[in-house]
Image (tube, rainbow, N blue to C red; front, side, top):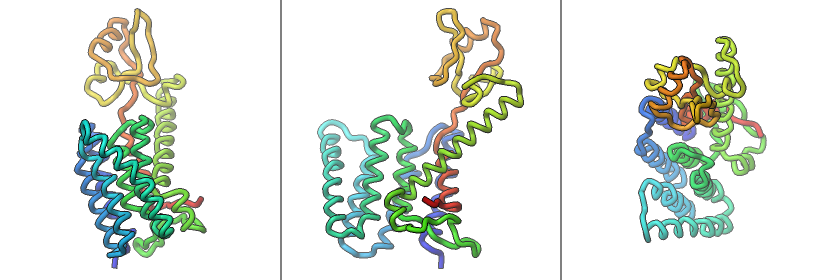
Length: 282
């Protein structure tokens, strides 16, 4: 019989691969991806807890926090929803006080509120990225342990796993690996630029040079501008216009630095795969 954690792994990977493909191709991820994956994740969790009252209540609170973010609230409704979100915190703390074993489930809600806060403060800029992390929190509230083709996975398992999965939840391991993946991407881009003779700091670490006529047809940010007659390089580029390109061409510039628009969900996908296979020792 397939283990629950292996089921979670097998469910998560196709959704995240499709989300990455969709974001790379269309620069858009349908909310239905996270809605459907989250629903499957909750169904798995309900199957595990059965009919235990306090556990069910904890999951119902988590469902409210998760699903309400798929609606656009206005006016009084928005204020009511914000109030209800705030009220979940003391309720969850009280539930955990009544039954400390509930912490693995109440932590789901706290993590989702945490990612909502990161989005609200613009630390996480993409709403799809925040939803992806919330969905992982629901899908895998504990550290996975399963067998795949006779191999015990993940490879690295903390000695005190019960403590580790509370102090450093699985979703944080995914974030850790996604950051490492992004770092490798940056280093790889720098090596590629160096081999091509395109040297510059820090632009060689965050972009690459491209023929200016190709820029409008690629998913990139233009890092160079002509402003007030001066040639300016942007480390944090914004969306460019045809006029920006024409000004550069008039200056005789035929190759420019650009920054690729790589959706962060691509790195999250790599991170969740690595977390399920490699694990983490804290």
